[in-house]
Image (tube, rainbow, N blue to C red; front, side):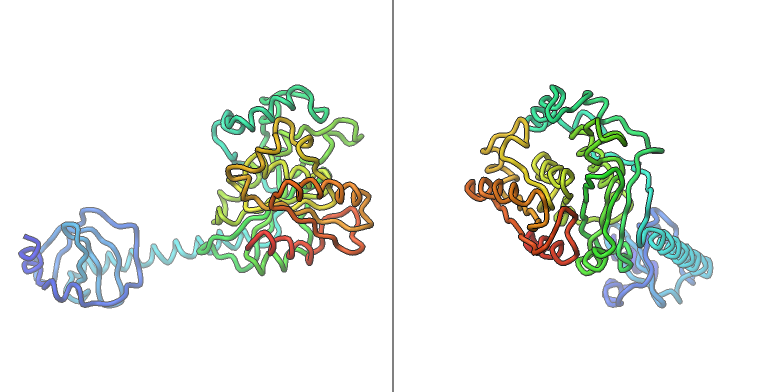
Length: 356
């Protein structure tokens, strides 16, 4: 039957397999009627075409047919498809161009989970949440308060390397700042470009919820809003889920460790600068054994600090606990580093240690 249809349309199966590469393609046009120069017709799906042939799908098989043997109407239709593809390509290029470089005050318009009940559905996350609802780290409020969003207010800063064109998946660096503002250091940009990483940092996830620094910003809010900023990036860019990293400084550094502990399936590693994280007391609801099993067992944890950081001695102390428990932990001691985010060099070394 298949061979009879080919013969009717003036095409042998040998010739159908003999033509080369194709230049223009779509997702397919189903059930179109094609007419050859002799007026004979077939029903076939359009797949793609090059300068001298068209690829059709007939009875589940792909065939290639010379354009010169098609009717003028079919050739005109193919030119229309080519024009549409070029127009779509131009639009995609314009869309990608608008996503490059530093983009400030981008609305956090997407959530990590569409159903808010899924943020803390897993048992360890649920236990951690309940500890904070009970006042851990001076938290105030409840789950619904911490998951409430306002797209007009909730915003983030994004940096995307100029090399991004939307065809290749890039890695992602999520940074949690201890201050109210979002932060992506300018000197990080060459590192982000070198390793094809897109960075994002949310506004409003600092240590304090008020300007007077009297009200603690609840940890569940800081973690989930940061994750929603990441989800917003992943809606706009092509991201490699195996190359996600979470980082932060001071209280934001501990939030980076907390985020990785709560959602180990999302991240390859966590980078904390100028912050100590006590095991297990800084992770309410967690036990040491929780860090030694499942996906947390494979997580890489690195702390970056130096002698000018007032947390330096505490970091040395807590590092012993992480190391004695044989976790994938490293302390990167940077000469003369103070209480600040890492410069480009230590950031690059941290990422290299985790694995790029």
